[in-house]
Image (cartoon, rainbow, N blue to C red; front, side):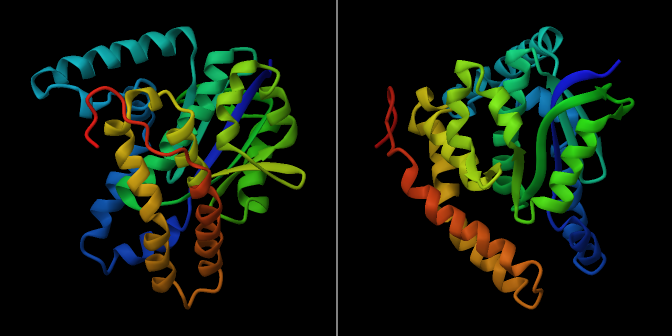
Amino acid sequence: MYEERFIAFVDILGFGKLVEQSEITPDLPRAILDALISMHPTRIQSELVTTVNVELIPPEELEDVKEYARIASAAQQEIHPVNINYFSDSLVISALADDVIASQMVMDLLTKISAMMWMSHKLLLRGGVTVGKLIHIEGGPMFGPAMNRAYYLESKLANHPRLLIDKHCVDQYRKVKTFRLFESFIQRDGDFYYASLATSFKHILNDSSLVMAGEKVLRKFRESMLTAPIELEKLREIYKKDERVGPKYEWLANEFAARIPEVEPAYPCGDDET
């Protein structure tokens, strides 16, 4: 009855503290609600599966293009389903291991969700990614050894704001040649691999489908990556008295210091502005 599936269990880092602060910070409940809505499966499937590069679309055509994108996303979901369940501040994404397009879409969505949550809400993710036996009915039951393992990776081993990935999961991904495009998204750490906000930006800027759209589309991601160390320092200052939180921002700041030099320089395309 179990299916072999790639699975990612993703959690918003520090969500509990945000909720506690929301009682005394007037604008915070709305910010939390907006962040959670952006993680809703219908939002992810309609906006992130088929991305609309609004920078390249004439305003008068934008709504029509978005509608075509929604239709394309629905068609892709029908042929290559990626299941998404959402509860509280957690997200589970999975796909059949023998569906190359759907299984690699799990990785693609992780890059986009990581970037989106930071760029829109300055929130960081922590998660676990593996492959194994799982039952995952979207909006319904979800259980299995792979679910237990992904949760264990996130809650017990990841430690930092990153997605910890089982080595055997990466080994299985690498059996398909097209996975080479996601090599920029992952880094080796001992017996595991991991992906971070910094590697998400690196992948988007170096190897994602957005690259051929040119700097007009990539600029916002490049600027967010370059300014992230400053934003992280601000957050670290806010939480400097918390011995558990400060080191997490420090780890990510070091991660950005390592990944920024690995990003390809801007490559203008078409009528991009210089």
